[in-house]
Length: 160
Figure 1 (cartoon, rainbow, N blue to C red):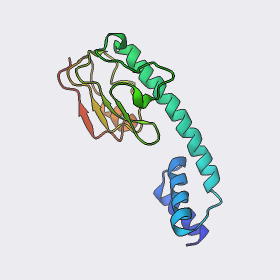
Figure 2: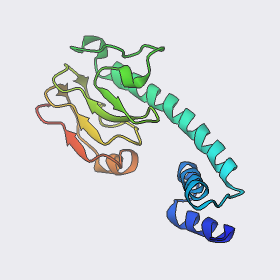
Figure 3: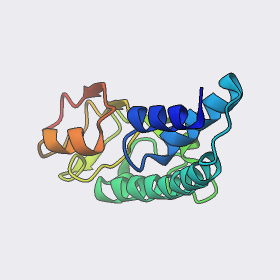
């Protein structure tokens, strides 16, 4: 394939300004098709910057979640708010290979509060289980579509 064909395909497959997608695409074309793009290095540098800011953003989101939902009274909060622990070692969290949160399981953990569902921004979250807590409020479907669009499983039963 020609350079322009690969660049056109990348533009068709990736949303605009989605640097991780472009980086993955150009890495694939280089590794599998032996076609090197002059755009790979810039897109991969941007992707690394986004990943770093996303990791720190997720830590901040989860710290806020802890504070706003009675974290010091949770049944198990091991690892939470520990600056030296990766998020993946915080109780109830599972991460992907990039260290970003993909699952939250805090069922029956004495979470309390009204703002759990209103501000959560975890772009790779696929599973959320907070069944059996004392959470109040409603789930805004626009928020889920906008900020939790990879979510495929949610259990919020037995809350208020």
